[in-house]
Length: 323
Image (cartoon, rainbow, N blue to C red; front, top):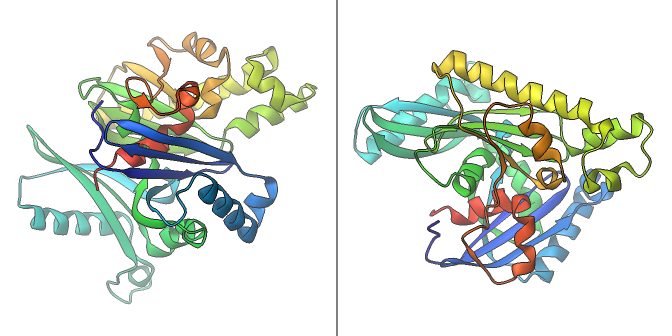
C-alpha cells in the first residue's frame, strides 16, 4: 500500500468512540482511540471536553486534521462524464450535485444559493471520466465538525466515510464487486465498490448496541462483555438480520447496476473483531467473508495496536487522502 509522503492525521468521530491515525511517509506513527461515555453522546459540552482531553493526551491538539461525515449525512453518487478540463469538470459536478440535493433556498423557490457544498474524486476510464461526488448542506457539515473544532483541532478536509473506507480497505483496483459492512455502535454502513470505485452506499439502523440489546432480551447477563468474547446462540437471530440487510443491498445493486456476482464481503469496525462473527457470516454467503486489517503491510510505531486495525479503517483512510 502506498501512503502519502508527508505527515497527515485522520480523525474519525463515531457514535461510541473517537479514533485518530497519524501517517508520516509510509509509517503510522500514531493510532489511538477513546471510548465516549453516555454523557459525551448526550451533552455537547461534555463531548468537547472529552475530545480536547484526548487530543491533548495524544499530542495533536492544535494540529491540522482530516475528518469525515457518515455516509447517511451526505448524498453520494458515482456518474460518468465526458473527458473535459478540470475547471469544466468541477462546474459540471457542481450542477450534477444540485440535481440531487437542492438547497433550502431553491426548494422554497428563492433561486440558487450557496447552501450546498460538494467535493468529488475523478478517475479516467474507457467510458470517459468516472466521478464520485458527495454533496450536502453547509449547516450539516458545520454542525458535525463544530465539536472537533471547539476541542482544538484545525480541520483541513471533510471527507465521507464510504470513500475513506474504500481507500483503506481496497487493496486491488481490479477486485470486482466488493461489499464493505462497517459495523458501528448504532448503525451499519453498507458500501459496494467495483474495481475500487464506490457505486452505492446504504446505512441501516443496526449495530453493536442492537446486538447487545438482543442478547439482554434473551436473558444474557453482562451482554456487552459476553459479546466481545464471541458469537453465542443468542446472537444468531440479530446477525441473521444483519445478513438479510446486506443481501437486500446486494439485490438492489444487482438490479440497478446490471451486475450479477460479488467477490468479497469485508467486515470493518470494532464489532468485526467479535470472535466467530466472520465465520458465522461466511456460512451465509457464497463468496469469501473477510475481516481485512487496514494496518497489514504498513509499518507501525506501536505494534501492539495492529490487532485492532479494523477499528481504525476510517481514520486511516482519512489520513491516506492526498488533499
